[in-house]
Amino acid sequence: MSETAGFTRAYADAAAKGTANVEDAKAGVKCDHTKTAMVDPTQGLRERIALHLTNKLETSQSKKCLDVGCSTGGDLALLKKALQEKGFETGFEPIGVDLLGAQLPKAQERLPEGKFVEGDVVALPFEDGEMDSVQCSRVLVHIPDMSKAVDEMVRVLHPGGCGVFSEGNFHGSVTYTSDPRLKAVESARDAHILSMIAQPSAPMDAYKLLLARSDVENVRIEDFSIFVSDPSFGMGLVQLKPMLEALVAKNVITQEDMNYYFDTLPAAEEAGDFFKSALMLEVSFDKK
Image (cartoon, rainbow, N blue to C red; front, side):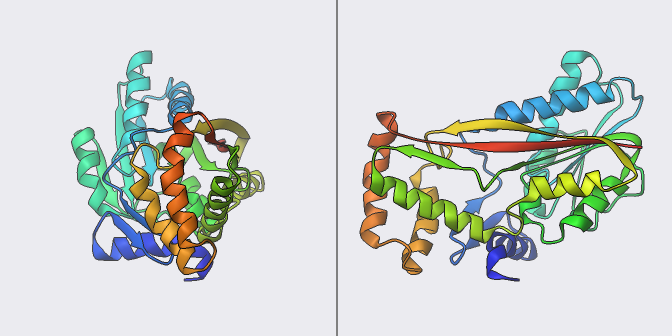
């Protein structure tokens, strides 16, 4: 696997070990995927997607709803809540698939009525036309074969089914701070993340692939702005240490830069002198 797919390699290694602890020193990632972020700036988008799917499923007697890259079941739980609030929950069958099988017990605990299986987006373990909806969030950036992934998710949808993909626009993150040294370190971190993902343009690539298909319709792309003052998403700055250590090892930043970042960032956040803005992109479609 190439250097540009460092995060993808880390996920594949974790899957091979049967763990949800994704760790790769070169990529600078160390994360327990059974734990959820304390602060989720994408919550509004996730709720919007749940409402979109709910409205699409309103008249469907069957509601077999697949989440590809389901993690611990959070998005399916949001969909269940949205269906219940609209009175459409009859027939709801939450189904999740994830490369990291070690996450799935938590998903099963969250949604006891659900079916959760280990699997890969490029070879989904489901029949043609089995699903009424499919969603996939924050996954496609890590998939080297985007075309195959889209093929598979369209394949498992039955005619009339609906799909939604959502991903970050990794080319559009902006850091706001009056501290040039903080900004330089954060910019280096952003550039490193961009170099470590397999598909930096995932949402636009998925959109173009869907537009070129004859078996889908109503293909749309919409944006969602996020703002965050804590780049660790409430998990503590220790979560950022492996990545900054990777940058030090590559001589991108110095040890002194890393120390300055950790010493200065909390006060900058508290003073409102550090935050990031970025776009999430939501791609939706219906199967003919």
